[in-house]
Length: 425
Ligand SMILES: Cc1cc2nc3c(=O)[nH]c(=O)nc-3n(C[C@H](O)[C@H](O)[C@H](O)COP(=O)(O)OP(=O)(O)OC[C@H]3O[C@@H](n4cnc5c(N)ncnc54)[C@H](O)[C@@H]3O)c2cc1C
Picture 1 (cartoon, rainbow, N blue to C red):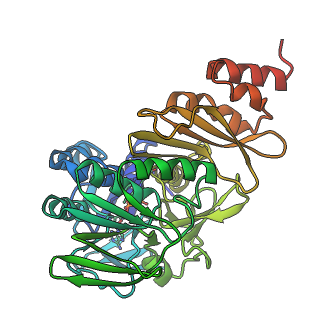
Picture 2 (cartoon, rainbow, N blue to C red; picture 1 turned 180 degrees about the horizontal axis):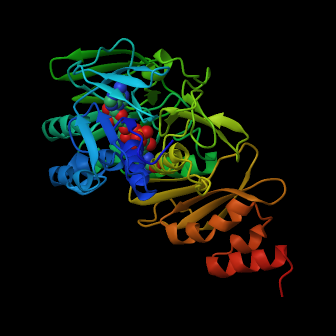
């Protein structure tokens, strides 16, 4: 591949936009065409469930790059356009407007769509999901009219929406089929702390419950639950996960992970076709910390894979992917996570986990059987979390007691741990 060859990016979201910028930064001088099915310039999705829901002025402030960036870097945009098919053998893509785009390398950055409920057709009055800016704008408008909202799903997204809606004064209920909130991502101790915090805001949080029917009615939605109770609300937000957008990849004959449905990529983000790469929420990749292939839906992962894919397409060596990091803002807390919730970790607390603290500050540190820090959760303590990055990356055996002693500054505790492990003077 020469630095003049044309590159096609399918999907103008986080991974697509980041990859386009990285290709130019790595010196690619050839044509870059980025096709995106949404109309707006590439934008950040994390604010959609936070500031955008309550503040229309945010709509203009969430661009991934400044307005003139793509023209300045000769990145051709085809917005509001769908890539309908890819002929991998001939290296040509066909767009919904009839344009055929030849490429030397292609990046699939097609993200995903909000998982719906089979019995609720898209467009059912009063029922919302959030994946796009248009979704968030529609929900924002409805929240200004409606006084009550039920969120289905107590994952990160569902809880963020509930937190924002409650802060806007709506009556909010959250329904979750698992016994705890965020059940797959955090230890039970953290879930229980957050559940208390959610309930203290006046949210009706119902765990281990299932909807048996959801019916639109003239002033909202009626929801029947398996315990025989029923809820009525002006609005229902379905936040039960993401379906990766992989139909193009499937039709092009690319290998998909049979379990998680993502497009299988190697460490360089290359798919089963050597000249087609993929990045972001649509992918499935081996995660060394877990020892298995997963689909990671996160802003950082989309950016990291985009950077590595750009390097891979050009044959430029890149730094390996950074340790997974994730954040969420909800219920007055900035929660950041580093590493992965590997099964079998023992979590220890640094700081105080009192649920009624207006601005709590603590960390939960997850150690494996060899005292290595594998997963860290920081509540309003992002600065401390940053200090831990090297320990997680290098899998350093740690002195947990020192790291969890809040009277020792984190920087000092990390230094002591490293010195003790490597017997430094
Ligand atoms: C409401 C919300 C809040 C979030 N909050 C956080 C957070 O707090 N922290 C965090 O780490 N992560 C968060 N995320 C996740 C993060 O935003 C995603 O992981 C990230 O956007 C994934 O980027 P992507 O490029 O893979 O997909 P996307 O950003 O979804 O981009 C994919 C794009 O491809 C387009 N597309 C698909 N198929 C085609 C086609 N055939 N032709 C043309 N275009 C196509 C889609 O329309 C879309 O525009 C949040 C996500 C949402 C939705």
